[in-house]
Amino acid sequence: MGSGFEERRETYNVRVHGRVQGVGYRNSTIRRAHELGIGGWVQNLEDGTVQAVVQGSPDQVDRMLEFMRRGPPAARVTELESERSYAERRYDRFEQR
Image 1 (cartoon, rainbow, N blue to C red):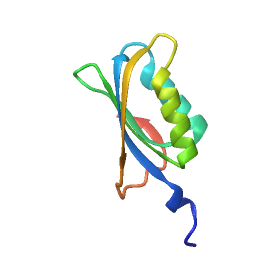
Image 2 (cartoon, one colour; image 1 turned 180 degrees about the vertical axis):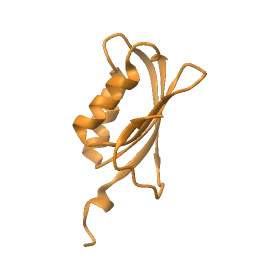
Image 3 (spheres, rainbow, N blue to C red; image 1 turned 120 degrees about the vertical axis):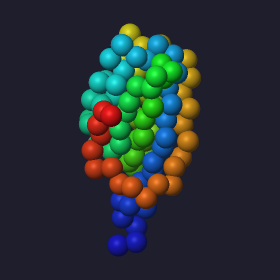
Image 4 (cartoon, rainbow, N blue to C red; image 1 turned 135 degrees about the vertical axis):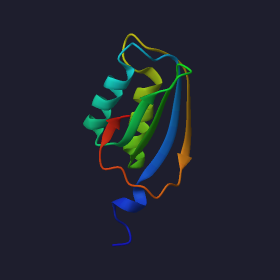
């Protein structure tokens, strides 16, 4: 089984800047992740940013990052940083921390 899902799984560490707290950003991110079948987590940080780990196929991750660049209607994303991670951990679901 050398060409299975595991080889196509990508993991990204994400940091979102802008008006992304108190506007439903985390909840909408969780909903979108569930729709896409993404694993990982999302949390607010004390500096006003949102941090997340997203894990899935390259297409799932691309679609998730595309959503996170916009967020829900009340959000104003000014910057999205994403960096590929080569973590061993597998996330089977997406949740809020």
